[in-house]
Image (cartoon, rainbow, N blue to C red):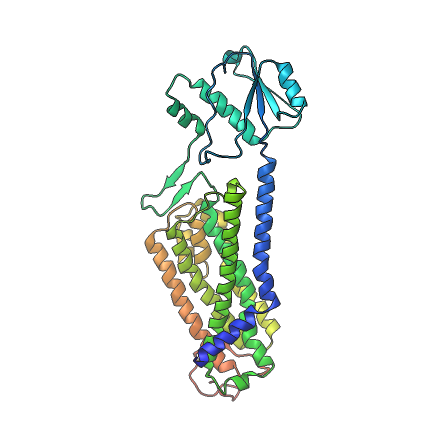
Length: 414
């Protein structure tokens, strides 16, 4: 194993096998479990699967057609409510008193003229029950047309918005899908905000305890800093994988096993996933490289951590103009922010909610990010090489662009 990979493995283990990393890895599963539990509680509070009664005084439902299932519901949908017909109001009231039904409707004799019904209950019936009853009433208004057409008319529609190039589909079955890019980007920014301080500490602590002198006797500064960057990036990818796994697990359990409507039919298009990967990866490299460069210039780790937060927060800049971007995703402001490396990830995620990002705009944004990432890595290696043996002295960023020689203070620049 080369010295570079030994450094990377050491840095990876040093960051992964810590209490902070374990706490960060466990936090998302706990939050996901809490969210799934909250969604399940809210979803069930709005439902009641007990039978629902009705009294047909108008003879409107003398030969009723069963209510259709809602769009996207499985044939064995457990939220289907049994509709029970009672010959009189007295019997329906007695059934309600015994708890056999959650409520009952009375269809008065003049229903065909008034279109009004009466609802009786002790506690408000479930939303699934009332929705099914009105679907039941509507389909029986359509008895005169073919049954399959009546079912399609009553069961509702799935509205899907398609972009001509096929890169954006928005379905009404799950309104959360269009916002997935923004959610992923926001979680990514939380991740880099936490880990940017780790990268600063990786440089400053070894300068503070003066172990840097020992390290550079066995490995070159370039390999040392490259190994550190690779090791910390590996720990970040590990944490990301853990988060994504438990988020995926929560969506599967919540949507398929617990039948939580909001967690069903959750999906992200491959084009959008590719876009996020191409912009978030270089953004991660930029932030970590700038954190290394920052760590090479400061004297103490605490000072570097304060500035690393400022570097990470620069990527949140589009948040302050979120309304103009959302309202006018094709404006000049939105396009310029998509091309600027610091603002490109969040801006592209916001714009992808309502439009399909043209490939040439995505290409410009990705190229600017990768060029900036390469420049940030070069700057980090340059500053690290020139500041690794400076104890108690801040390194001037201008020295990164000076040739090898002696600094103004008389020390070796490189």
